[in-house]
Length: 120
Image (cartoon, rainbow, N blue to C red):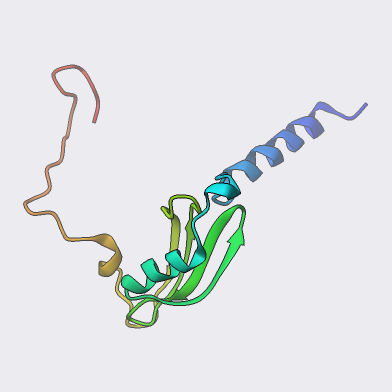
C-alpha cells in the first residue's frame, strides 16, 4: 500500500491543476453567434483580426490593436461577451486604452472598521 504522502501529493497536484485552468465556455452550440459578428465587433474596436478559432468551447480571437500591440481574447460564443484578454505591448505600448478613464476625484481609502464592525 502506498504511503499516505503519495495520496497527499496526488491531491495537491489535482488541486493545483484546477487553479491554473484556462477559461472554459459551456454555451450550447445551437446558441452560438457567427464568427463574422465577432470579427465586426473587434474591427469596430480598431482591432485587426488575424484569426478566430474555437478553444475550450470559446471563440479565441488573435490579432493586433490600433497601436500594433498583439492581442488574444476569449469570448463566450452565445453572448460574444469577452471572458479574457491578453495584450502583448510593444516597446512603446500603453495600457491606458484598456484601463478606462482615471477616477474623477481623489481616491478615498478606508483605513479601519466601519460602524458595523466590517473591516474594509
